[in-house]
Structures are given as structure tokens and as C-alpha cells.
Length: 171
Image 1 (spheres, rainbow, N blue to C red):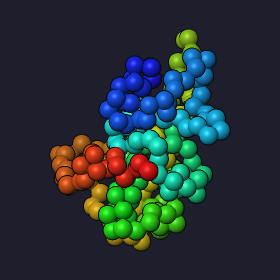
Image 2 (cartoon, rainbow, N blue to C red; image 1 turned 60 degrees about the vertical axis):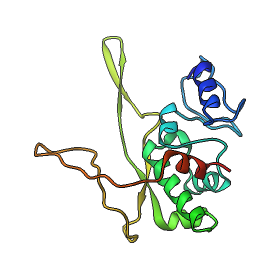
Image 3 (cartoon, one colour; image 1 turned 60 degrees about the horizontal axis):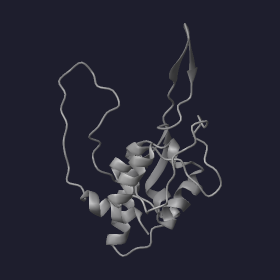
């Protein structure tokens, strides 16, 4: 992230002015400090906006995870839950979210070049996602992590507009 990128997100209403800062150059690990979070710019493309609704913060606390550990799909699921509860005039809660979704760990390994050798490391983000519980009726899964060699097909569904999803994560 650069200061220019942050200013652009402030101009577009994704972030409140003065709410974000560029990480120091010496920091190489994504470790949040007290009262701060680490996010990646890819998350904003899926509807993440700040400040977060208090229920979203409580959901992450309930599962014991941080924002930077999530996949971008996680924010779509969170946004869907927030949009549905607020549309139905219900109060979003971590317990309600946990009744519908579970936190799914997706183990990954990153190969890090080190001169002529390489080593393996855990990635800094994209290792957790929210998945529908198996006991909950859910939309048909229209994605795959890996495709076979046969013909590819997919389906599309209508979803709330980006501005509707964005507004549900805001206070």
C-alpha cells in the first residue's frame, strides 16, 4: 500500500479520512498492533469498508481470527449475512453468524526463494474462509478450487449491488 492508494480509497468513501496508514518499511510480518488491523487491498474489492460494524468485530473475536488471515470470499459471506439481517430488521450477532457459517482452514504453503535455495513458509493471508455449515440449506456451490480436465461450466446468481454490500459492513 502507498499513501496515494489510501488517499484514493478515502476519496471513494471506502475508508474514512485519516483512518488508515501505510505500514513501516521495516515491517515484513502482518501482525496487528493493539486497536489496529492489518488488511490487504484485495479485500476492498469484495466489499470490505471501514469502520466495521461492531458485530463484524465480535465475529472475528468469536472465531479467534484476524482480518489478514481471511480469503476475499470471507468478506462476501460476511456482507451477505449483514445485508440479510439488516434487511430483515434483525440485529446481527456472532452467535447468529456461527449458526450459519463455520470457519474453514485452508492449509497453504508458499515457496520463498533464498539465493540458489528455496524454503517453505506459511502465507500471511488467505488461509481461513467462512463456509456454510452442512446443516444449513445454502446456495449451490458455483466455484471450485481445482478444475479437472473435462469441460468447464459455471453458473451465476444475482447478488446485492456493491454499494448495498459495502453499506452493510459500515456502522
